[in-house]
Image (cartoon, rainbow, N blue to C red; front, top):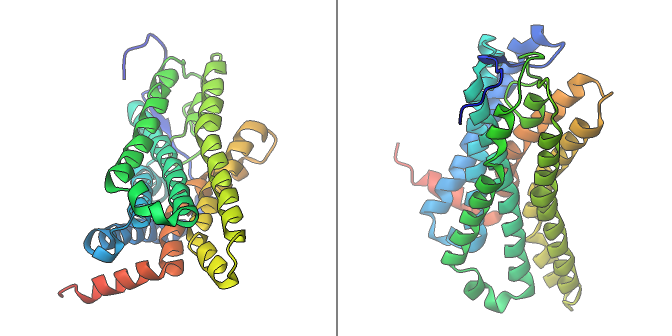
Length: 312
């Protein structure tokens, strides 16, 4: 990570849910269920897309990328969350905290890029169906996935160094059971203007622009659907977008809420900050496999077919 002549604590202390420390043991069960659903559900989708030829289409390749990012985010938070709630082992080494922080933000940004790619997939499928197979080739899909990952890495590469340049001397107690950039930088006893500007730039230039283009794609989709003479066909076309719209809402609504609270909610009770951050990280990986399994017939059929052929 580099060497800087500034003061850093050897470790940070993670926090569960303030005010509910005595109830942490009761929260272990729900947390384990959420992680089981997130890891198990997304892994099943990844396997179904891999082994079922009927799912070897652009829409499902993008879905597998989304599932991969959800698994990665869950794995990034799993060790510290369960250690904090199960064992009350709250310490995390300084460099380990930076690595976790980078991974959480990296895969969150990657997921945003994948959701944008999925909206482009829906736009081409509905607005230009005759060229769908020629526009979204395997090479183009792979390039879009690699582009989302590369954008995340390049944009977030300065993040650990921007934290390491700050002297951390106010406290070593974090507000969550995992490491996030806004949480760590607030412990600095130095000017954090650069970090704040950088964080706002990342938020607007990546997540904000992704959300804008997703919205624009659906404006174009609605315009195209409204031109379809048959009401049945127009509803059928829109129905193919429902799962993606729900996934977008599951990702961006909590993210917008937590960003707003972190930046403008200085007088909001602390437990609200913690609650919204937990919703932001835990809810999308849990909901996405449930949404696509419930709303996409092809996914349901592929999962059932896959389990029927498992030899016990």
